[in-house]
Length: 261
Image 1 (cartoon, rainbow, N blue to C red):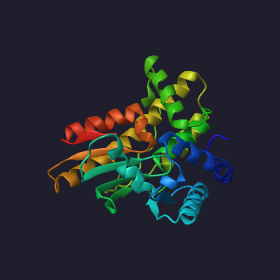
Image 2 (spheres, helix red, strand yellow):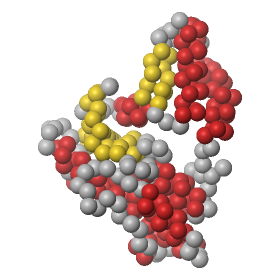
Image 3 (cartoon, rainbow, N blue to C red):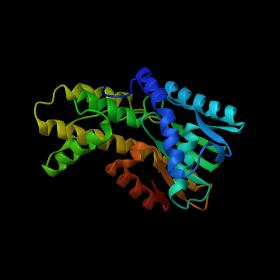
Image 4 (cartoon, rainbow, N blue to C red):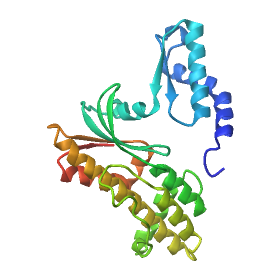
């Protein structure tokens, strides 16, 4: 469908969730009798899918007489870094996904402060919608990243496309990607060759990386004034983009932060 259609996604969740839960427990070598509790994402997020998961979790908890733990979707992203690496609190987090874009100071479970957020679209949504306008398919982020790599390999120049820079007059850590999304979608209609498309993809990727870097640097400077241990974590699907990851890793090194994506 070129993206997630909420109604279709929710119906698919209903069809799949029982089998997914059974397979997860089978891989863990346990059954329902071995459960101590049930945790389920309770929002924010795409409401249809969230409702299916939460309803399923409630049903299991009620049937087995188990406690139900409601998990905040964004907090799940925030602490997911600790699943794969030793990461001590507190840390500065850039949460950058298809639906969310925020800078957070994470001090522990249930103890976080928001330093900046998107006032309109998320970076991942911008990637996907621009990729759709360019006919690249879904998920758009990886497809656009591959096309941008072609631009560099062929000696292209993404800088020939002028893309807007958002919120330049503001000194806070908020993001905005709607203007970039609209401008890039319009420019996509003017591309006459594969090289044009590759150069536009390169320009979009660099513009998104630049805005993420500019706002993150502001947050780092403010964070460093109040903390001695400087840890920087990037979470969410957009963190898989190599250009963005490299840009943010260089930024962390510049300001003395450890880096984990």
